[in-house]
Image (cartoon, rainbow, N blue to C red; front, side, top):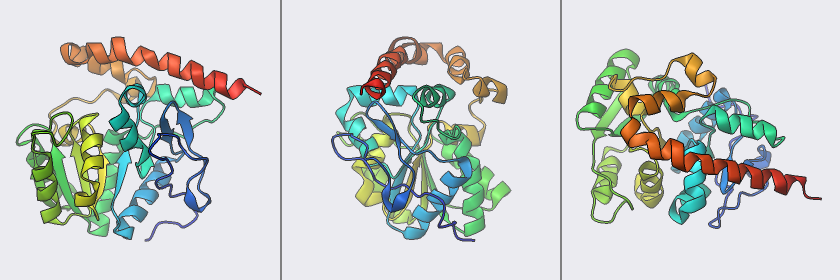
Length: 279
C-alpha cells in the first residue's frame, strides 16, 4: 500500500547556514528548531510513511535522528551542521529533546530513535521487497545482523560491510571505497551504523554516490540487530535515562560525552527559550 499523501513528508528545508526554514515543502508541518538543528514533528507511523515515500521516489535521501549530543555537536562542528542542514528527515531521538520541545511550546509528538526505527523499517522492507545494505559495526556484526533479518523477516539484504571510517570521513580512510561498494549493490535502503558524527558526515559527503538509495543513520542499530550490544530496558528509555544505562556499560568511552559535552545543551535551550520570549 502506498504512503498516504495526507501524511507530511518533510524533505530538505534547511540551508547551508544551518538555519531551518519555516516549514517543509508541500505544506508539511513546521520544523522545530533547537540550536542549529531542525526536527520534523512526526509520529512514528508518519516517519515510516515519509521514509517509504523517499524510497519510492528513487532520488536518494538521508534520515538522521538527533539527540542532545547531536545538537551540541552541530553547534560546534560546521561540517556536522551542514550535514543536518541537508537531511531529508530529522527525527527526535531521546526524551530530553522531547521535553525541551514542550518547554519551548512546540511539542514533538513522540520519540523516534534510530534503533527503534530499524526493526519496523526492515519489516516494511520485507513487505515492499526493498533491497537493503548494512554497513557499520565491528567486522562480522553486520553479517550476523543480515543473517537474522533474512531469516526472520525475509529481507533481501544485498550486502554488508564494516569499513574503517575516520574523521573527517574521506581523508585517508575507506569512506569513498565503502560508498562505492554500497552503490555497486544497488540497494533501496542503507542502514549506516558508524556512530555519530561519522555516519552523518559520511552519508552527507557521499550522498551522490549513495543515491538513489535512502540512507538511515542508525547508530548502534546494527549491533542491536545482531545481539552484540544490550539495549536499555524500555522503562529506562521512557523516563529519559537511557544515557545513564549506556554510561554504566561503557564509562571510559562515554563519560566525556555525557558528563562534559551534553550539559552544554542547557545553554542552547536557554538561548532558544529567550529568543521565543522576545517581542
